[in-house]
Image 1: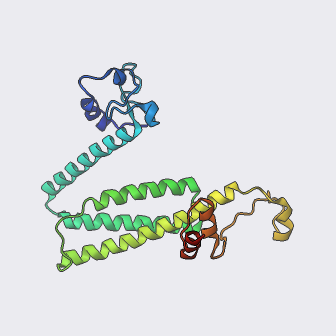
Image 2: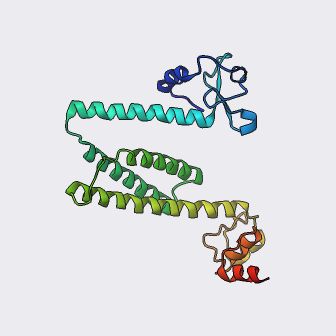
Image 3: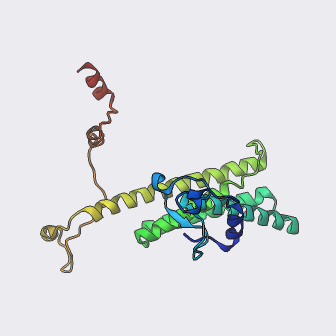
Length: 238
């Protein structure tokens, strides 16, 4: 895990002045004091390359770096507003929301065109979700839908919500079929029926599978879960 230089100083300042024996030995996290062995969390050196470095878990380090980054971002925004006086909070928020919506629209377009490998799509979506989380945190309060600014915010937020829903649904579908196709064995014996080109390796990726109306309930039942009312009534009377 990479710890940005701007966060390292604050991270070192956050280290306990007096460490426990387990923290000093690298058995426990220096931030949350949880045992790496019992929690199963990944152990990461706070100062990579330093043999005397304390250790922290990935979850704590990720949260700490994000906190420092947010503080820097907020401070930067306040500085820009003080210097220019032309970027009020509402305008900045609307611009951020619209930018994220456009990014989501671009990802949707690329994914539908098949221009992205699954890993490329995954990283784009992770970046989009991060940008979305940062943008919505800028929402100025209070806002009333009865005001002109409040009505505009509601409109832009709804457009972003719908775009994020489309991207998430599309990505879920892409990765569902990607996993199914990767797990499926090659079927070279079907190439003749499918009229495949000569260089086909027998991989016939599915793009749409119709399991019928009842398969989901039967699949859940195999996992010990009953959701249909008729099935629950039958269980109750048996």
